[in-house]
Amino acid sequence: MIKKGDFVRISYTAKLEDETVIDSTDESIAKEHGVYEEGARYGDIVVVVGEGHVLKGLDEDLEGKEVGYRGSVEVPPEKAFGEYDEDNKEVISIAKFNEKPMPGQRVKVGEKTGIVEKVIGRRAVVDFNHPLAGKKIIFDYEIKELIENPKEKIKYLFLIYTGRELTPKIRAGKVTVEVPKDASINQFFLLGKYTVVDQIFRHMEDVKEVVFTEKFERPENGEKTEPEEPREGESGEKKSEKVNEEA
Image (tube, rainbow, N blue to C red; front, top):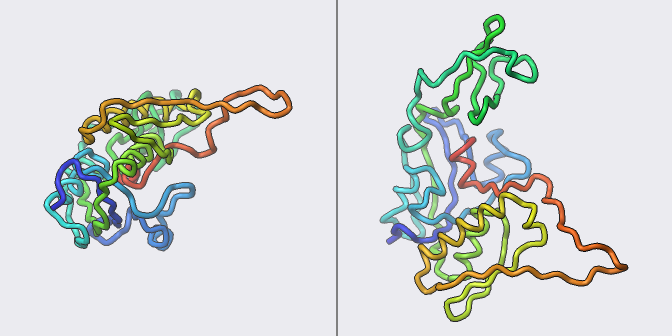
């Protein structure tokens, strides 16, 4: 049976009670229902059960199931995007925006992101609730595989937390990972690698040490060795994160 800490490969489609599809790991379904995102990674995802890689309600439902399970779970608002809070709105002067806000527009105010509900004169009412707050989310999902190979586990941890597909080497309790050349200017990778290390130690008792290495090759024609710019659109976003944030 699947338990907390297990690495499992799953696929899912998420929808509202009225059958409106809001997300899917299946690219064709996403396109069919108008929720396809250019540049997003589609296909089965790997999650660590209990680590919040998917919505809490789905995460909890994975426990106790077997590989090959196919079914649905209805996730209530409190285990999805939260209850709708009428007080989580603010009246903000339009002078604080770079351009005049319009109803329905997604805006960022300080560290918060919200939706402009309406504009009255020189003021805008911004709703900071998640767009899916108060909604029940229904997941149709399948558990396809239990990942047990240590290298595969670490590979997927890097993919989840840094967006990079890195292949580690493991020997006598020591994990060695070659750092990408652009890592020194990639804030997402720099922050994510510490989470990966924490997850490795939490879920892999045999690992005693994690080492990051950098390799530089002599450039041709005397060119300077400089870090590469991050690839366009690189954010490390996975489908398991997408449904937690934007859906």
